[in-house]
Image (tube, rainbow, N blue to C red; front, side, top):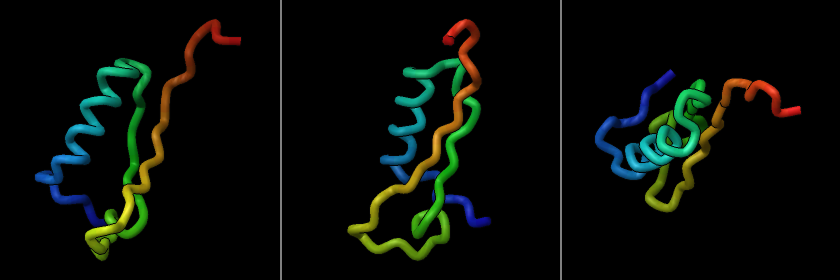
Length: 59
């Protein structure tokens, strides 16, 4: 699996926003699609799956 360039400011801001929003509930965020493969075009979107830990007492 190819990792995205760490210098991508959009990914850095998104990751920081996830951490602020979900804190300890954030388990991981996975980039997939063309940006993860390294063959994205300038107009390609960001495909991200966000996994959260279960919130106790939610149901």
